[in-house]
Length: 320
Image (cartoon, rainbow, N blue to C red; front, side, top):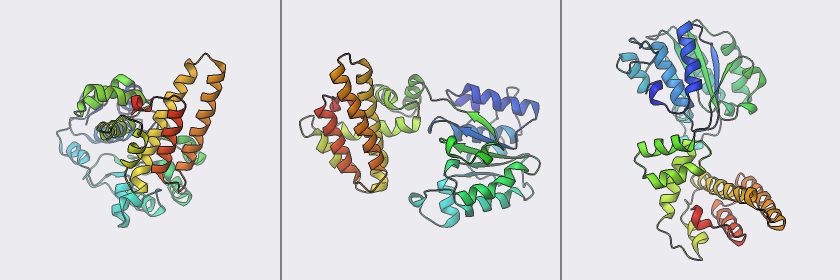
């Protein structure tokens, strides 16, 4: 994928192209912003542009040379994209069990960074979810991002830059990524064969994130066949996955969608008594979000939240 194919991040792309144009490429960068806005895609596009054998006049990778194709397939020996899938394969663990970026993963990357490039002009090491580096891993990374070998770039991708070590942030050039507009998210969903009305509804609640939007669209499709009667809240809970790992992100999205609707109603409400009730309901949903992080059964929590919203005159069937 080239820069031109990535929507909604013109500012970040302009900065990265300037680095290529001037040859002044920062040895370490943090790509930060909401999840699902294109940070990983642009990191890989940047790696392709740095190593493209037929780079265009507009600094767009050609996508046809051997280097571009290898990076696209993530088989290039000098370009490593370290996400949970990479870590699981490295450590011979299950992907669903990954909670943090571990020191073993960082040691593997730093060792590779010291080796001579096999085929690349620029070696690029990308760490996804860098805010999840365990302290030992973050400390092990410090000296390598401060003084990397020549033509080596570290890119740390984070949706929560504020939680990262200040010593790491101070050693990196930060590149901000904005939330995507509702229109752009709708277009991306439609490009992925999601029907227009569903795409538009998902985009409204996605908070600028395609990651959220795809999950919302999937949820709405799952709930579409349910009977729209008094048992709707219970039906929604029963249609959620049984496993905690699969159910938790879906319930989190449901809570976010309900909270957005409640907040919108609060903003538009003129009656002070009703406004206070909605404010209390917002506080209840803050509690639900915290409870979801604990061992509370997501299905029970979802049903409780839906019933609570319904009893406060929130049209949950309109939302879901």
